[in-house]
Image 1 (cartoon, rainbow, N blue to C red):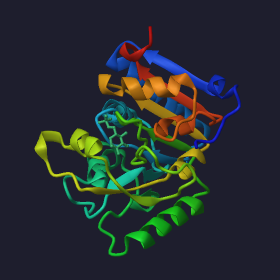
Image 2 (image 1 turned 135 degrees about the horizontal axis):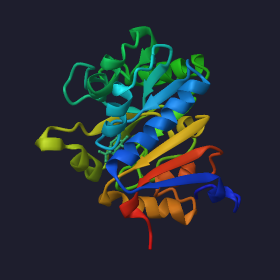
Image 3 (image 1 turned 180 degrees about the vertical axis):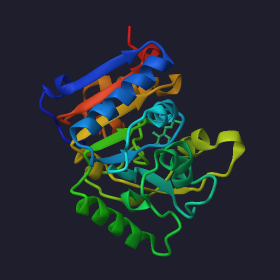
Amino acid sequence: MAPSLPTTSRKRMQILWCDSKDSFNSLAADHVLAAHLRKPDLTIALPTGRTPLGLYSVLRSKPVAFNRVRWFNLDEYVGLSATDGTSYAQFLRMHLLDDLGVPDTNIRLIRGDAADIQAECRAYDEAIARAEGLDLAILGLGANGHIAFNEPGSGWHQTTHVVRLTELTRAANAQEGQYVPPCGITMGIGTLSGAREILLLVSGQSKADALQALLQGRPDLMWPVTSLLGHPRLTVIADGRLRPG
Ligand code: GLP
């Protein structure tokens, strides 16, 4: 059973509906920039996927020094090295980090090709703990409600762990027919819920059911995104076309 939440939990969630891609991306960027202004050495967990591309493009265009930010990624494919074109590490380097001029010492990305993947999970949790936890977790949303690679039915107290991906997720992530590995390594919902602030980005018609599950305000293990409902600082930036009724 999913944990129950106080009935007030939904009231803590701030939802911002956007009627254009530009407003979606600039609102998301403003949110990140404001967090950065409050704490220039904040820790940020980054998502991959199509949804954050516009945000990354806006951030790249800003004359802001992000060199004190400590960067983590949410997830990675098991077996892929950071130089593999399908890896999330490569994606984040290409779409954001390389252009920001961040020192490598401030970037810790999951090593999908680690020889001992369980040891990598532990090392990653330790790195997050050494950074005193996440200040801001930026999340995308899967059509089945997954956040990072926490698929439906995942526990809500887990830290970094290995997951078998659903065929739905693998198919959604296979752009231009490229091979998508069967397993991922992901920050757990326990880690994500521990972030001091969460920014959830929801874009695309395929996310309508998952967003609806969140808006219903009822925690449900089969919709991992509903694990965020009790979070004290959750902001959702959503495509206006997904607005109910
Ligand atoms: C992948 C990632 C998720 C991401 C999701 C949505 O499964 N592991 O972190 O949220 O894709 O991707 P998109 O934004 O392309 O819809």
